[in-house]
Image (cartoon, rainbow, N blue to C red; front, top):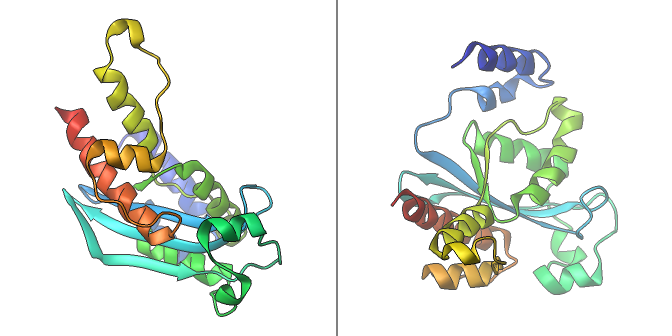
Length: 210
């Protein structure tokens, strides 16, 4: 670890609101990641809420399906739109016995630990998670974040002749999975999407290394 990285880590730990989460700032396990997906009440990162979380650990070249996390979260506000229900199928009555957001975040953070995060359009999910954990921790997620749509874009661009470099690429998850020859699960289920992102990550990691 560089001197700058060590100083940054000490600063983050000093400002950490709950010491129980200090392991998040520890050494990153070799060849381990967590693939993550959230379902939400809508698509506004500043207003909408997380209602489902799916996560699965990756180790080496394997998706560890036995090491997974699947949570339902009861939203604090009644802002579950009909459009969102149509996408993920989760209704208010389905979430009535869900966890409160603080409990869900505690379980998620312990599951992630110091592992880098993998996901499909991960930036949106991370924004909502950061909004939820900041009041507890005083900090945001410190882990490196790997976006599979970016990996896929890079891989596709490599295959294009020079005069086509920069061409638009279809980054939809179903397109990506089909193109990579990977099995698909019903989409817009948090755990299913996390598993598909994990499979895509491993395949793309291998392709980009060749």
